[in-house]
Image (cartoon, rainbow, N blue to C red):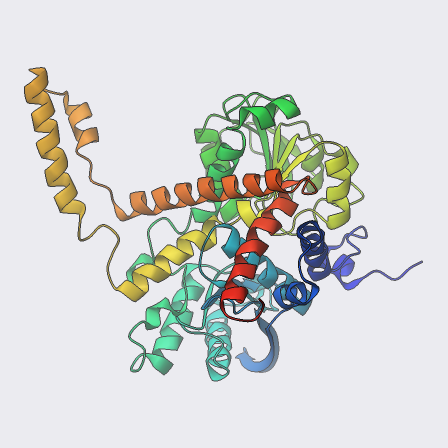
Length: 484
């Protein structure tokens, strides 16, 4: 029997034989061939600029444990670099390099002026106390500081799988302890922080909300939907979301609020399916109360969680880990649209099967970009030292009040209390953040769609997204003088 690859071992999936970073580069090569990109420039763009492998000791209980960790800066065509830190006992260097590369292309697609980066700490957070996790996080941050792999102008981490606001607050505090006296913008060293520590409202839900905004724009194009045998809009669509963590929960919540019916939810221990739909908030509440989505009374529980991928639906949103759709199950997928809410959920080989079936794949480098977009807004808030809307909110309210008063005088009648309150509601920071995110996702999708129309050999959205991304990176390097 042939020996399994490292990626296959990591995912527990014998079909995932191509390493993640190689899979990303295969997609890159497909796009660069369509563009007839200069070979030297192609090598420059797709190579990881800096790979920092770290081994550090941490006291865990009565023993000293040696922790393996990484930080990869993929591209320095824009600074700072940007990317989350993954806490997982299955994380490895190949995965971190792949995710860093995706961050470069993702930032370029949505016009966020960062290079791509990613971090990973090889631990299972569930196996450690909060105090031990804090010790690990702070030591990891200190190691990054020593080698200048963190800073608001250098490299800005964020939450990822296994990490969140708490860990980002520890990182910010550690950085400020080392650099606070010499870096006035120090809080911008990391994003995804709690609001009280310089975070931005709307960041927690940003990636899932971005998935919703992206899919909403995708299905709004009537000619594209006609090719799939679908009507425009989300209203009559049946949707399955695989993964019910932060991204999956918020994506499902906003998609349901947008009019679609959520017929399936997959989690690590089981899946739920109800062809008539289920209430996402009720599922969420059930999990809070029981610790699992299992045995939710409004749906059938499936013991084999990945079978949810193969159930009938219009839109499938894999929002968990990479390579969940592979050569072994791609031909069983019944969805007409797959929106990649996670990073790399479809293997390169599986995507070729899906494309031959006529499935519209909305790539992660676009659809998953809500988090980095709002992280960019948080970084801007940190380096400008002012909350969004603080300067203009009251002025806007005064002007709107005067306008409403004038309209009432012209109409000869007063608006009802509900109408008046709606008209006079001043935009909050979260309103502005969500508005900026929606505009970003709409603009980016239409740039991707335009690239697909300009290049006849770009027959799928992933290739088109890479082209849209590479064109911007190419321009940056040319303007820096690297290539004529």
